[in-house]
Image (cartoon, rainbow, N blue to C red):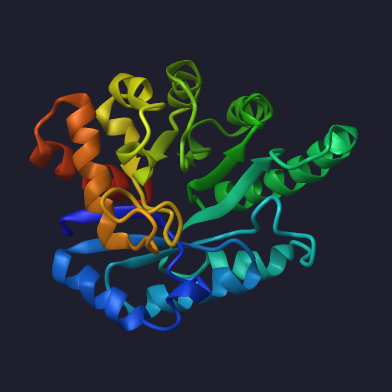
Length: 260
């Protein structure tokens, strides 16, 4: 069992090309495992390659909702990826309307919804959870998940990564038996403390989303999986719970969420 589990990393990102071996070595020394997340075909393939070669690494495969301008979602390719032993989630997928002009909102919602539903079908047919990205689209996302939950019941499950909404929205995901995950943003912003306090401990995952959003005391540096320890510390602090208990829960929750 690892000491920490980073539930959403991009170790397949080019920013790790120069020292990925050293990053992996630090993870091994600190007892950190991670789910490496794909955002398109190449990144998904790279995530699988990393997971195959390294104990303690797993892969998620999918096409990000705003990253498909140059890629058509090839269901046959992604179904082949999903059959890989160390693929434990489908995504990063979901909805992102954060940069969509108002005049294109309806058209983009239709496009992204169709793409997201393909990921849902892929996940359910392979008995895998979803790794969901959502920005400025939670009402739409919840509507889709609530409808699909009626169709697929307990077969539909997953995690809302980089959660940044309030307790009311969190509860709606919990009611669908989804988890939410928090990043190092918790270490320098107080916006999400109320949600962290509200969320049942068994519904939370810890993540870095590296190489992005490095936590305090590493602000301004490239983020990496070992920094997930800072996320776990601040979750324990906000919830006023024993650090060791929270650490164990984060690992246990990840294992359960991804059937590891």
